[in-house]
Structure formats: structure tokens, C-alpha cells
Length: 318
Image (cartoon, rainbow, N blue to C red):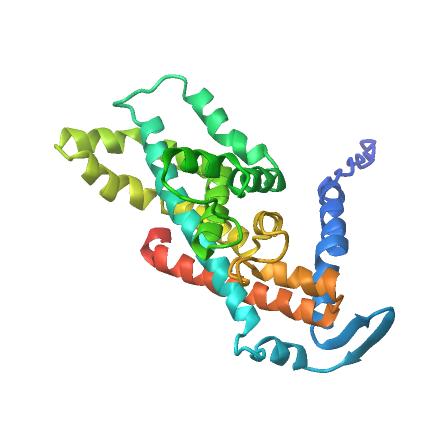
């Protein structure tokens, strides 16, 4: 009879789970988002349905008024103007004036710098130089342009010396399109470098063999751009246009500083965020300010959907 020795089962090592560490590492972002973004958004939505303001040192509310703040926003004033619609129109006009030129100029620069035929040198230096205006504060830009185009500024002095004008012209607060043009010009100068770098990255991500094949088949530069570069650049173009639009609709610091918060002349350069700031820090009407913020959010969402649907096609993302 054989002696059998029972083998003890080997202890298996417990697998170490690292999944919890992933949640721990991303937890700070969600905590910060909940405190500094989500909670203010919810509070803004709640305030838009409340009558909550200051009349002197007296606090009125908060009391629920439903859609009354929205009704007041879209009600015409004594002169028949709906101020929120006027501010929205001003914002869109100034954004379009700067964004169209910015996108076209940046696309041309991106094509030049990424062209293998031209093979330009020192492109890194050019990218750094073009991006530098983006590092300057918008308020500093606005102060600079105010000093340049004011009645006592050098621009007036040059025009007078050349004999093009007979008297000094206030380009900042007298003429509607000069003020809007200055705001658009500043936004263009500050952001075209950033747009150029993004478009260059998109073009450099396209397979070079596609361009070589097109050239071997005798395609012109225009045909290569319209049939290869532009279609494959659509995702970057959508991103650039939508982010530019979001920033344009939130335009505040440049026209605020340039016109000293007045939106001169005759409120034609007053933006939606300037109107929001008037109610938030001026009259301290938190209910109306919250309603303006919600309207801005809805308008931004609608415009983003329109841009995305008009540029993108379903077959591009199949």
C-alpha cells in the first residue's frame, strides 16, 4: 500500500487592481469642474428665473418670476430698440469682420509654410513671430489702439500732414464702422497666428503621397487645394471656426476698453457680454444677467450646430 502525500494547494497571489488609481488621478478635474463650472452654470440658470437685484443698498428678492426676465430682455425700449438683439448683431458683425479675414489670411500662410515646392526656411521663427501677438493682453492691445487712433494720436497727425483730412477725426467714438473695424482688426492681429499654426498642423497631417500623386497626374495647385487639401482639412476648419465663433460671441475686453464701456457710437459696438456686465456689476441685476448668459449659451449652441452641419458632411466621418 503506497503512502500518498496530500499536496497543499498553492496560494495564488492576489491580483493588484490599478483601476482605482485612474479614478483617483482624474478625480481632481471633476471636483474642480463641479465647483467652478457646473455649480455656477446651474446657479446662473436658477437666477434667470428669479427677481434678484440691488436697488441702492437694498436687496430685492430673490423671488421666482418665471420667464419675466427673458420677456424684459426682448421687450423694446422707449426708442423701439431691443437691446439684446442689437448687442447680438454688433457682436456677430465685429466677429465676422475679423474672422473672415483671419481665416483667409491664416490659410494662405499655412499653405505657404507647408508647401514642399517652396520649401521655405526658418518657418519655426515665423510661427513664433506670428504667435507673439496672441501673448499680449487684449486690454493692452485696446489701450494701444486707443492711443493710436484718438484725436491726439499719431494716426491723425499723419493724415493731417499728408493733407488727407482737414481736421482731426475721432475714429474711436464717432463713426460706427471705424470703431467696429478697429475691434475686428485687433481680434485679427491677436488670433491669426494661433489659427495659422492650427491649420499648418492640419495640412502637415495629410499624407504627402496624395500631393505627389496629384502632381504626377498633372493637377494644378488650385486643383490640389480644392480636391485634396480643403476636404481633408475640414475637421481642423470646423474646430477653428467653431472655437473662433465661441470666442467672438464672448467678445468683451477689446470693445470694453476701447470705448470705455459705452459701446460708442450709439451702442453700435456694445456686445452681449458687455450688456451682461452692465447688469452684473453695474445695476447688479443678477436675474437679468443670468437670463443674458442663458441666451448667449443658446445662441452659441445654435450657431455651432449650423457651422458644423454646413461644413461637415456625413460621408466625411463614415
